[in-house]
Image (cartoon, helix red, strand yellow):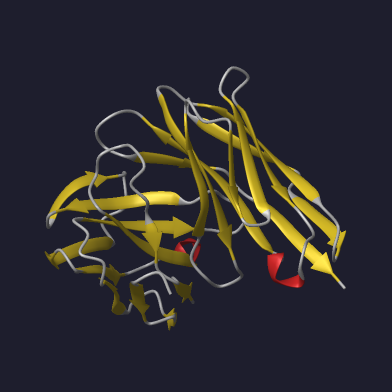
Length: 113
Length: 115
């Protein structure tokens, strides 16, 4: 069964601190892995997308890593800001041809002043 | 903004009502999607359209009826809903259906409450 699991479920950090969110997946066949940021009451917005051959990708203060052997990914946020408060969703694309996405339940991050 | 708009943003309806959700994409994409997002659950794919043809119906109850009159517009017609249908309904679009680096762009969603 294709599945994406994220941890922690929720996280509170102080403004300016770093944090790392985790994603484990069991999907086949793997195509790519994406991290989305979803602000409350809004749709998800893509942060990064990584294919099998990529093991790290950055987007500003966001850095995603991918270990295709252990089927794990992480999203590292550096020097957090209040605007980083959101849900972060790990999404794995499965198969060839039709782009089927398997979503994790997300990590809810709160950055406090 | 992502180039995908949804109306209304909020909707409260009774179980006997009929309403429609609208999605419009301004990106020139060929594929459009409806997702349901319930609290503490992963996004659930409901329907997929490619070039106005439905290519996936993910075992969605018939009280949800999609319509795609052209590649820029997608509707979700609702009738005789249940309280458990209350959720955030998200529309998305992508260049096409092929797996790869094609990104899905999401709209802001419609928060639906069924009373």
